[in-house]
Image (cartoon, rainbow, N blue to C red; front, side):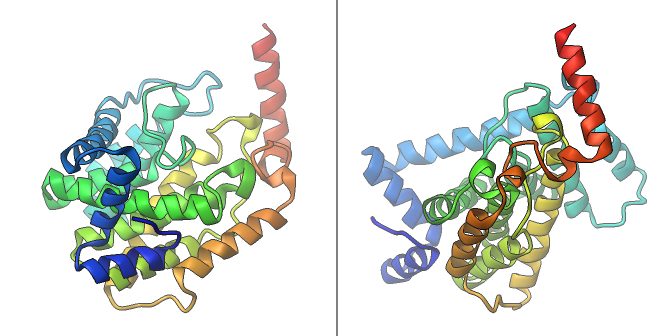
Length: 293
């Protein structure tokens, strides 16, 4: 089972008359020489690890730098007031994305999906969906296979690393992966899944990776929330019949080109963007002094 593009996955699925997620699962079976049951349970274990990470969030914890911690709990408290500007699902998505990003900063166990810096996007979208819509766990695992296959194509044809392609490669990729999963869970077509992927990734093109103090905290954690909500909006547009004028595979190729053209100080070096604002430099000086003591 060989594919190198999103279009390849769709064509194979239509040729075999199966969902796209099955093509991705069958490729894993071939590559790792495992049974269908073994590969499905391996992905289920990944999903359960995401769920455990979400459930073990501790709003009282702060990261060693002091730059992260407690915001997930603040969002939770605000959501409980009934004053949320968004509906139940996107509000919960935002909350869970921040919680997961904070857990990563606080050295808790997370799932890099596709990276540690973007670990909040896909879990937030999927876990919140299961919670709000009451979907069966098996369906959630199928959606995770779909996300994984899209991430695999992005990694092959562009990058999922901030050091190579900027934050568009991390949060952008995660958002695109999550958008397709939502469309699948909503019963959307293969075409709609692919357009959701393109719409989500287009919105993230050019996003710099500029961590303050070189830490995966500021602005990374809040970008997880933005990427997760972006996935929801892209999925809803695709489900409504909105189509991306640029095909998903061409958007992925564009992300690679933009990443290659991006200055090095905007690619995870902590030497550009928000990292070199007056506040960013002051925080770095303070953090370095604290580490020496």
